[in-house]
Length: 347
Image (cartoon, rainbow, N blue to C red; front, side, top):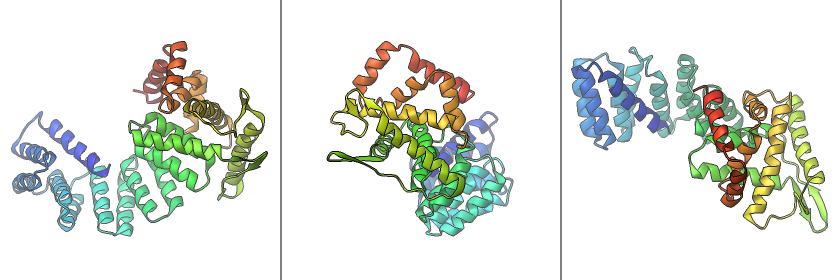
């Protein structure tokens, strides 16, 4: 993820400068194209030509660092990237500091990487990539609380960063923030274009919910997840789990109880549809859940798009069930995506 972000920047930089071409811009553009083709030495040669003509051009040094990083020549990459920070780099700071932190990470220096991310985020407080990278570093250090704090900074600056929302849900489950786990995991599933993320999310939503109540023979036992927080957070999380456990005790799926074993994909979807609708309502209407993602679920309900949302989430589990719903509700999925793109994302 870190690598592709920087590469995208390089392409954009070339595209924007080519409108008013000069020798330095042309050399940078040629270098970016060579880098894309895996010809890193040739790309570096182009950047060195550009550097001779523009020794104080931060973009030239950044692209040089990026190609040296691709060659795993980390010391050279770091030297050029650090040199870029001493120049006028404000237009590339997000990618520049992400690259420097990545290099330190790959050199086995996580504390140095985190120091860079903190420095970079002060310069680019609207960045989503820098705090996302810091999240990954803290996860590697097995510091889930700090990782969650940083991923929150990332998602506060973006509605569409797949990795940030995925890890927000994952980390929330690790530290026992159960409303946030459901809120971010559902949202991550909805925006993701990666099959592995979608499958993993659905598996965790299903598995973690199915086993908060366990049937053993003729008896049913509560299997309450761990709650690490104290005070109001602990009360919020306990109340959320208690609400789900109460649902298990009172609700049925026809003749089946929610805690009964699901033997078909259609039964798994039936279970998920029931549970996720309840979770959305709990998230939207629980005042104590003071999180920006809550507004998404409130507006989803206000627009009467709850069914379209949960059926879309469950489509990969059992497509025939989704197709049957779609036949009876023509246009609802299109209305969901239209609202999401035009209203929620404000495109």
